View 1 (spheres, rainbow, N blue to C red):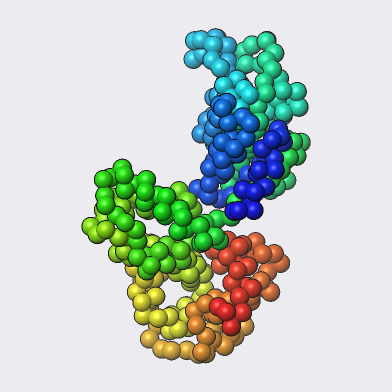
View 2: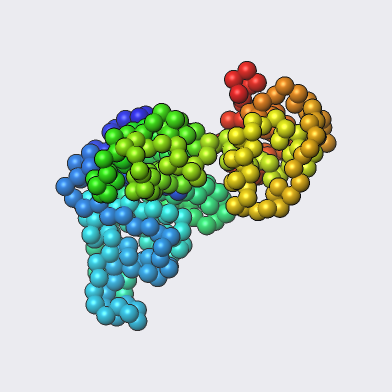
Length: 353
């Protein structure tokens, strides 16, 4: 993240379009606002539009405005985001959700800095720095003709990929401090911090909702806290990332493999998994193992798991799947995990798992 912030400082003086990718809640708009606040345009407007929230017609009106009578409900002239963001920054989130017509209009603005309102003839000129973002695989959207290739390359002046929170646990502590300060004031609590055990739990969590989920988690914990420091008990629904990964992989494996892995788990891990799975489907745990096998069958091949811990077992399964499938995507999908998680376990050696 420090590298990303340093790189932004090299481009804020220019009008180069920026494209930010990353999972939902990872902080894409936060980066865009940081760029605005540190750029020469900081005293001008910052307008954010989520392109996925509007129908095709409404989105064009949101972006480019409309003249009175342009469509049934257009009773008066309306300025769009481009006019409101003039001389400032326009942040377009989920840009692949734009209709092809809207994409064509956006491309024209990027090429000529001009546009017309819906239903109008007047050509308007604007000076807007555009920052686009998506949580989708943008190159796949281009390949499948869902997003214009020429627009993609026009927006791709510089690209940033924001890693998910689970890949940068060192960011947890400062984010937690910020959120605790925010909600301590809001709820009038005298919370002074959190225990090391609680912080460790947060640092080991998967955070599928990323920073947005972390913020709401801290908000709830502060609001309900009964002590002056947050403790593990204040986060009953937060589990280590390993638990989430293990559950995903568990549900894709045959019963004999499930049994083999189960017998290697610590009792606390077993209880945590049972609690999590019980909220999903009782069928997942319809038959718990009673024996203690020393090996397991993984796609027709026997893996010796004697003396392995749970991390080593997952690494062995991940490496085997990488060998068996033609692509990392197929291997990850076979285990119901994302590619980065698969790669992390596949690269893990027994000595450091």
